Image 1: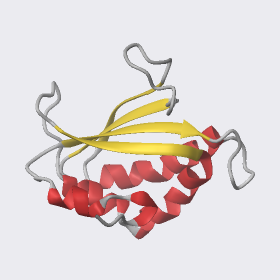
Image 2: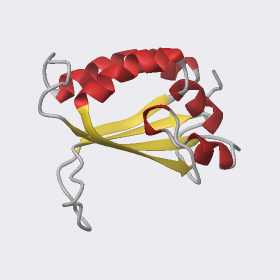
Image 3: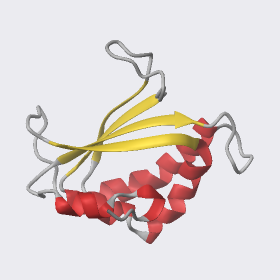
Image 4: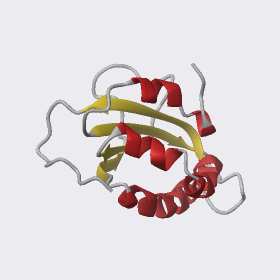
Length: 137
């Protein structure tokens, strides 16, 4: 399986059914200091978030929820202690790939790379939601 820019498993995502909304579950851990010397890893992630917000809106995606991790209420995460979780709902997998493979994303992503120590995105097919389907961008 090939990976695209920034570790994106593009072949995997393209191989999944694209029949409706998808939620991308982001698990993050930050560097103590941004690799570019401009504040903390969290500060760099906030700069990334500002650039990412416009791209997300353009394809009809939205952040459903974000929060700081307090610890493992069930199970053991000592090997990969996550600090932050973000749930991003896209109208389709195509919309997700459109964002992450764009030149505009690459510009914003440098801030994520400067600030994030570890980042996993889990693709989750929506089987239930209290929210109406997102509008396509």
